[in-house]
Amino acid sequence: MGHPTLEFSDCYLDSPDFRENLKCYEQELERTSKFLKEVIKDGNSVINAIKAYSVAVQKFSQTLGVFQFDFIGDSLTDDEINIAQSFQEFSGLLQEVEHDRMMLVQNASDLLIKPLEKFRKEQLGATKEKRKKFEKESEKYYSQLDKHLNLSSKKKETQLQEADELLEKERVNFYESSVEYVYQIHQVQDRKKFDVVEPVLAFLQSIVTLNNLTVEMTQDFMPYKQELQLSLQNTRNHYESTCEEIEELMNRMKHRSQIEKMQSFLPMEGYLYCQEKWALGMSWVKYYCKYHKEDKVLVMIPCEQKTTTKQGLMQLTLITCHRRKTDSIDKRFCFDVETIERLALSEGDRKLWMEAMDGKEPVMELNEIGFKFVRKCINYIETKGAKQEGVYRTVGSNIQVQKLLNAFFDSANPGDDDLHRSDLDVKTVTSALKFYLRSLSEPLMTHGLHRELICAAKSDNLDFRISEIHSLTYKLPEKNREMLEMLIKHLVNLSKENLMTPSNMAVIFGPTLMRAQEETVAAMLDIKFQSIVVEILIEEHKKVRRSSLEECMDWVGVNYIFKLQLHFQLSTFDYNSIMILVHGIFSNYN
Image (cartoon, rainbow, N blue to C red; front, side):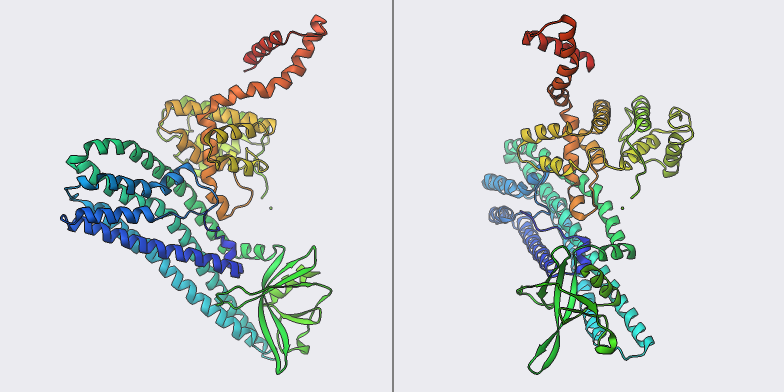
């Protein structure tokens, strides 16, 4: 359905597959740029040619009808599906009202042309600049690398060190430009969902509402417009909630410690040079290699950095691997594999290949003190902040939040802190509650159920989506489920009195309750589906309580019916009588 996710970690390896994926994104951006030019051109035709208005609108509607959005990931939310179908809906509307068009919207240029021109110049223009920088740094790095690898080991040590430092500098510059380019591509891919659709939506609305001959059509258009605006706002909210996190991930991926961590990943993979013998001599051939330690298989893909076609791969079974001393060959970083010489890119790279061929401390726990803390926070928020606008959107002072947490979780007197003291405010308590939930050693809805919950949220069938998410919540450990029910009940209470909708609260609590096990771009793009899970739990909370009766039947049967058998000394029971009794017990239990 969509393009493969571009991970920041792929920038470091710079594999042929990464370049191929990058090419797909570049083609999509070119297609988007051409599409925007067409929309702007057609929009100007509508504004400037009243006599040719009907023809221009028809062409415009055809342009919209042909275009299809490409999204990142393997599934779309309902909002994204709505957005993806929006241009087709617009096209159908224009075709219906084309014969009634007699007036031109006076402010059409401000509504349509300027925002799209701004998007093209600022967003697509910035992407082109990042691409030029990436290509430039790529050319510089691989040019320097070729020179570096041809240096003789007989050079002076100072010259070799200078060459190493220069190569490392070029590597860092290339890696940073690659990461920034990938980041900019993700920004444009996400922003175009609303930055391109919103101007068109505004333009169409002005045409529809200001046309005296289409009043009835305008009234019919309003429900869809409101639904699309809600989808756009939800998409914008998801974008804003993940944008900062993706940027932080990008910055972390630039850090040297993260680069060293990626170097330690298995299976080992990267570029190697192989010395091959020919009739007229020997030459070094570049390969992209992957080593699978379990099978001792070295996969070698012949490649050149600028090649546009995929070449066949080779698979070698490793027998021995040992370092080649520099006095036996006029190259550095060499090691022998089955008598064939391989040349690594650097000393560190050589060590990694040689080694290959032969994680966050929990801060909070889901325990009795944690339950006590959450209950006190909920009581405080519902008492003092239930009617406060955006109660969970407002962020408290980090100093005050840490002070509250340190006081409450003090090992000497845990849980004794009074939240109703005068120096606390609502935003400090809400921030502390979110911090506690984010800092659990495992997210409340567990890593084990994360993928199943995300898959359920991606289902096209709404009824299945709801039932499956509810079913999965009963697979949670008892403490997790108890805490989740307490939180959902709290959010339901707030949604009845506060201006925050279930959707808004889900955007905040989705990533908090369903933190992914590994921070990747793909995981962050799934945050919107995490929000869907929490939104369903809030909006459909009554179904959870209804279905919980069936879940507790086994427990009730073992702990109560058996006791009744002993008490009344009965060997058999009337089933209907037992069911009435069970319902009564469960009602009291709730």
